[in-house]
Image (cartoon, rainbow, N blue to C red; front, side, top):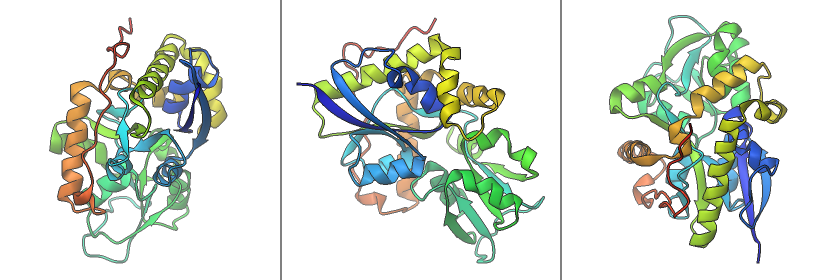
Length: 293
């Protein structure tokens, strides 16, 4: 019997790059039937929480909150050095002030890792409003917000908008923890049988490796969904967010996730003290680290 998998991925170039071969059926679906939706990351977090997906991309902060129901697949994560969200301002030499209720900071969703980092590093600094990530820089540029936590393609285009860098939150994470920053990954329901989970993991890994071997072929798929259509920006995005840890989280990725979990617990955010530990799917026979050369 064919297993049907409700799959959700984000519209960001790193995901559409990684899933191009799956979407276009360039790789073996391993006897599975995928029903795919592409959404904003916070929409994915919310839909996962409500049980709308079997497998989906999620912010790792959201994954921590759903660890009793979902586990992380080894392939498909966005994790690395120099990949973090940027805290931007609409005025030069300004920054959020602790205890002040005057400033307004825009974040790309309450369950995003970007919001978690802002809460960890800038606690009780003014008001926070959650908006879709594509709204943040335009609102800063028009002066309807003071600060914004910028993710995705905006990392490469914020200067063109006349905005000002307060801090690279990823750099602060790296300096504080010594680990790469785990932004998000592919999580799967623990209710799925083990053999099906292993097949899902193999399809995702195969799709990712296909993209790495056929880079130019993925461009049209990425441009179909990207906020920023410029080819150079799209490839900058892919080169930054797709790396060896995307192919396989490995020990370094597991350590980074544990660090995120520990700090989220210590921050007392969203009742995480009651949440189960976040598990990573163990490797099956076919899920060994790939030779990419």
